[in-house]
Length: 135
Image 1 (cartoon, rainbow, N blue to C red):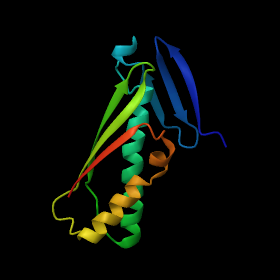
Image 2: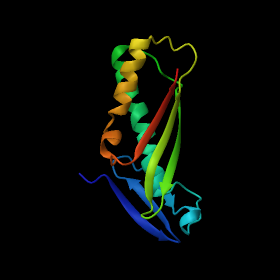
Image 3: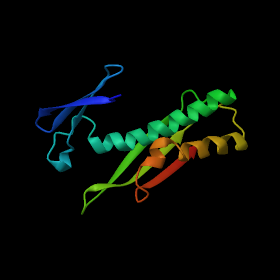
């Protein structure tokens, strides 16, 4: 089944529609690549997908174990390289809410599942994934 449909709107902007839900995401080329930078760039979405995937997989494991990580925040920084222009690294910082009550063993389980989420396993191994967990 097709996942999405993408329309080029002109001026380096696209509209992607998730076909199952109808959810829409617009993208712009970044300012440093002749765009307006008013929306996520496609490479921003790759980096953001990594952080979101890690947190989602952690959420699945936490739910299955009866642990609560609600309110966890993730910040994502995409690092771009040149020649060729590509993502060379992603810095991801997890900030867990105070009072989560997770012991060291539980934390390690969540960290391990984060590192093995489908997006982390899908991006090229040359893309450095620098992940910090602030418990």
